[in-house]
Every structure is written in C-alpha cells, then in structure tokens.
Image 1 (cartoon, helix red, strand yellow):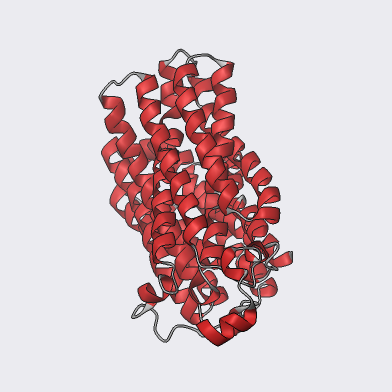
Image 2 (cartoon, rainbow, N blue to C red; image 1 turned 90 degrees about the horizontal axis):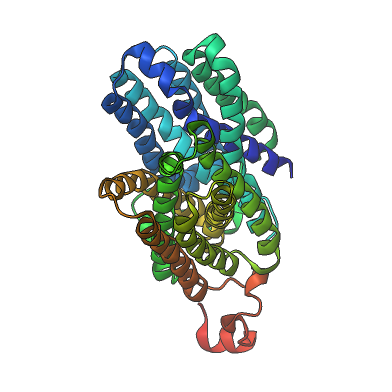
Length: 417
C-alpha cells in the first residue's frame, strides 16, 4: 500500500503540473505580452512533450527498470518546470514546457507498472485505477491552491511550486519504491530498447486487442478533450452565467473521480474489460441526451456529472486495462504508448470540436456526433475483452474457455499458447 500511495502522490503532481498552464494563462499572457496564437503554441509544446515522453520512457523503463526512469522523469519535470518561472518569451516557455512534458508523460507508464507489479493479481486493476485518480485530483487541488496564491505571488510562483513538488517527491520514491518491480524478475527483459519492442508489445496474440484498445482509447479521449475544453463555452452560449458555466469542466471531472471509484470496486471482482465497455456505452447514451438538456440549467449539470462518471471515470481505468493486457516484460511500453495515444486524442478533440462548432450545427446534432466517439470506445474495449490472450495467473481468466482445457492435454498436444 505504501508503494501505491507514493505513486498516487506522483500522479497528483503530474496532474497539477500538466494543467498548471491553464490556471495561470491569463496572468502569463498579460505579463509576457503573449497573444492567443503564441499561447496556443505554449500549450501545444507541453502536450506534444507528454506524447513523446510516454512513447520513449515506457520501453526504456522496461529495459532499465521502473524506478530509475521514474526518477529521471521527475527530475526532468521538476527542473524544467522550475525554469518556466524565469521564461521571458513564448518561444522559451514553449521549449521548456516541451522538455518538461517529456518527464510528465514518462512518469505515467513507470508508476502504473510499479503499482501493477507491487500488487496481487486480484487487486491489480483496482489499485491501478485508484492510483490514477490522483491525476484529476491533483488538477482539482492544484487549481484551488493556484487560485489562492497566484494573485498574491504572481504566475512564476506557481511554476516554482509545481517544480518543487516534483523534486520533493523524489525522496519518497527513493525510500519506498524498490529498485526492481516485484514481478520483474519472473520474465526475461527485452534484449534491446527499441529494436524489437514493437514486436514484443504486439506478440503472443496481442496485435488485434492492442489495436482495438488503442482505437477505443483514442476515440474516448477525443470526446473528453472536446467536452472539457468547450463545455463552459457551450453552457454560456445557452444562457448560463460565465461564472457558473466555468464549473462545467469541474463537474465533469468530479463525476469522473466518482465513476472511477465505483468502477474500482466492480473491477476488483470481475475485471475491467466488461464494466468499462458498459460504462462507455452508457456514456454514449448520456452524451446524446446531454445535447437535448444543455440549456436546462441545473439539469444540465446533473447530466454532466453522469457523463463524467461514465466517460471520464472509464478513461481513468485505461492504465489498469493496459496493465492487464501487456505482460511484465513490456508493461511500461504498453502503458506508455497507450497514454501517448490518449494524449493525442486530447489534442485532437478540441481541434475537431472547434471545427464542428464553427459549422454552427444544432446542439442535438453536435452531441449526437460526439456520442459516436463514446460508442467507438465501448466497441474497442469490448473487442479487447473477446480477443485478448488469456492469463492463467489472472483470477478473472480462470473460467475463460482457453483455461478450461485440461492441463495434461495442453502439455501433450499444444505445448505453448
């Protein structure tokens, strides 16, 4: 449990550092005389950095160990977030956010793999979900802290605070997390970092389920990126005051935390695949309905909470699903690539949403289109459940068809599956 708590703290810092630019953007733009286009490039630099961080750090963590790469990711995040406090231009800030983003994206596969491998098979999915709740919680808590201090101390102090937190967590990581993952010695490590890693990740029958999983992840993250970015604006356009409309994204994320907590209790009993596919399917129906009540005041906020519980809550289980789909020897790579694909969806979502809003589509039509992305997510996760390789060490697979074949018959006739 101590290991899970340390990883939870890392995810809180990751969530805060990822979104801190959103918190201070108005002050920063005014102080550095940054226009909207330049500010967009600053945001983009950080997001692109997190994509590359997940792609690169995951395979390296499989090769050289989870803890060393987590320490490197935290140092990179801390140092370059601190440096942002001294940036004098949009270009320098974008470059610093890109490099810092490498660490932000690289920390996630390491902590997800560490949490999965320090737990029993029965508790693995639940603990990974609970650990990952630290990300939105860090954003919520960090936003509250930022609101309390940024007007008094200025925007540079927020970057100093975020970088300091990232460096401070190095101490519990060194003291609590073991130098090797609990299950790391049971499977051979990759002979090279990148040479055969693609083949290893997709080997042993994982090609179809991995592609389905990544497709579902991308679809749902596109939808989430759209909702989080534009919901306050859409609510405001439909007669809700700006201060209340701004709560739309908060309600969505609070619903996500609640949904993830509920899902963690369910997946501890039956595994994550079926419940998450159902959650996304329910989310599709709720998004469709949201387009018809968006101007109904409090009813819209209640629906937003439910959408967040199904969609954002389901998305918070993605690292848990990845930790179940990919075995120990490629687990960090599989999680890292999954999260990188999710980050791409978070970038694409606002872009696609902006294009659709510019077409001035009726809201019921817009949300009907949006609901299709949630449906695609449900279909992707459902296909993973049907096509993933079965693991006899996994309690949820004990009654699967492939596990029902008597062991002597397997050894005599089939050797290896």
